Image 1 (cartoon, one colour):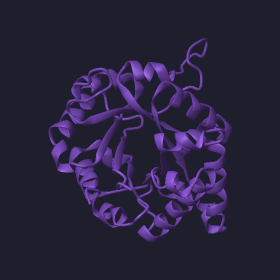
Image 2 (image 1 turned 180 degrees about the horizontal axis):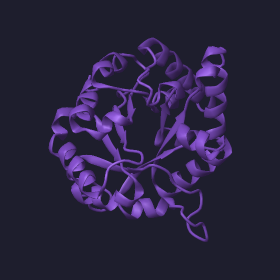
Image 3 (image 1 turned 180 degrees about the vertical axis):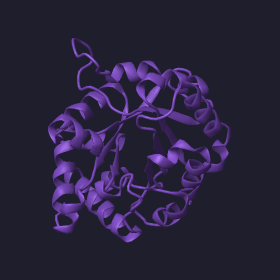
Length: 260
């Protein structure tokens, strides 16, 4: 079986303005060669998606720059009276190929449940997007020895009803909540343990051959100085990068660490 292509995505969250978004996207695109062999994705705030698409020279959803565009969230509906929401087909329309779903901030701050995330996953897949589905435990859950239970529940719940054949069409991001934006990071061994668990769960939802095709990212205070050790683990296929994605000088070395 061919090796999984690493994927490194930058989640810009609610940061930057139009000019800085354009400048950062151009910087990443111009240095794309530093991370050859790695799929790169930029996920700006929704109001700047077209700005970043322009910087990446996106045409029909494909990027001459070799850097893909992603949304940070999506609705589970395709249209209608849903004020403030963004439908998956709208993301596709502005050039997105990916969308982050179920991020811990959406779960903890806005009450998104596994069932809500699952509905969004189905809608994203139907629109032709690649969902980046986030799972991860709180600090108190890890300290209580409940990491496996929590992550297992989130994986099964967030992927409920997804056909086995569709699993390779998505990406899983393991983000321990206690490591997001805190400066703390799971050790490579801790991360690998959970990534291996996730892959075994995917095998249970399909089979080992299918599970081996699914890319699983790590997220949580990923920096240039810890990316190489994370990349060396067999089940860590990339990174979902937060704060360090706001500077090309940080984001690209992280991506380069996954070149193999």
